[in-house]
Length: 401
Ligand code: ZN
Image (cartoon, rainbow, N blue to C red; front, side, top):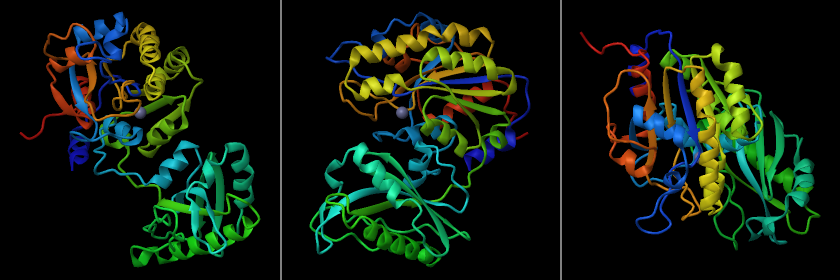
């Protein structure tokens, strides 16, 4: 395994590594030959890091694969997202910072509408509003099932989180109950292996009780469950890379992914300045700092090219404050591309720069997709960036005699 290789070679050093993630950084030109968002942005400080440092493009998961932010970040932490997969239930829990315990079975759930015969007429309960759905989720919280505590937390609109906390560890390989189309009854929870039979029974009894509690509701009168999963037991970042790791992010989902690999995660208000201030506060206590900046992704998802440009410029403005503390090696990149043109995440390779440590020169005189395509580090898998940074920070010993 790749992480075992790193763990075997990691050596102590008095160096600090900074990973600055501009979520959804990669973009596309609005018309052929035009600049991307990053290329249109005025980024004198990032350009300078790119000029002195080494550039390239990375594919977070694999060629042609559009990553979610979870897998995109795992790759940047050095974990192969195809090996370290997170269940959707666990991701939903991370997104609202529900404190999962090791035996907990987390499920991504949503309200649906069924008719008198129990046939689904709307798989999302008419996309019920958050105002209507939140009290219904509260109604479902605390349903009692023998052998497990049950928690329900509203997430957004028709979506909620269900957590089953059994007395003992159970398998969580249970099939989703959503048949995928209206006109059919919800599927019975079906265990995919013998160890997961008790979890399937728990889900069945929870669903039965939920349906009774929702019986009088006109629209949201049943629930669908998917993505049953438990907290994964993965190698911890600190053990693999030998660095005390800090994560700073305004959004809970990113703190959650960082905690999955054992980082110490702190929250900040939105905005680049508060990110820089928290980095300064935490700088001495950690060897590795991950800073997460969300606005470029949000603007890209909204299809707002100019706002994405402005968000990238906001990130650029704090670069001097980040560099002033003297991190030895710095990576600046995104967890995936979110071109405003597509209004969504995309598979396009993401520009990155690595600054600091012993390195060759390249011609990238500015930070942008075109310049990075000609960078010395070429096209890489996202998981390779952190080992490269660790090497440049003097933290990886020789392999073999
Ligand atoms: Zn993202």
